[in-house]
Length: 131
Length: 79
Image (cartoon, rainbow over all chains, first blue to last red; front, side, top):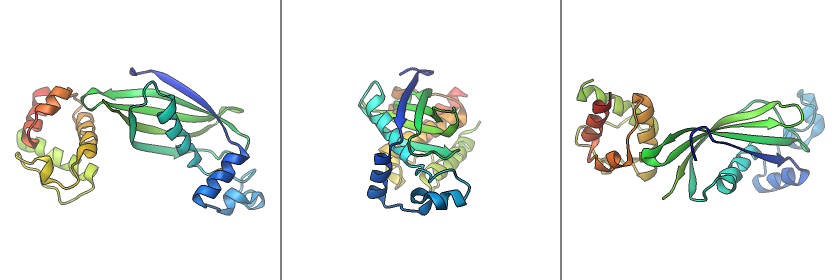
């Protein structure tokens, strides 16, 4: 990986993904499960759990980089806009910096809703390439 | 920058990264002296130091430092 290298990956927010996230983590807050409740609070639909995106980050680091010898050391994510079932979201990642002394790569990422190019979330990952 | 000043700045970085307000670094401090300073946090410490002083180490330089004082001297030599 070189500084400035870019990657992208598309993810579908399916009803199955939503229901499995609910089953796994049991966060059944009505904002995530009750459309009427979500609408009452200003959203167009029940909103997806922001941490679904963290699962996508895990998939990206584990499966989409040129090497499998990698671990996540730190992660910061800012949630900007809600997303909903049936949204298609692009993850766009760029290598922001490389610290060769410790084989650490700093990645900046953005999640962008494909239908209207809204920024859903952005942040930074620090990963280590293991020898 | 003097060695004392550099150690003071290291101390602030270590407190922040290791989340331990009781850290008091000395020239001869080594990883075994600080409970939270392990192989993983060492990476975060080195990156934080490189960012703070706007310098870069090589892997060989990191391997050569035997204590905090030597690493601080390494920083001073790059400023």
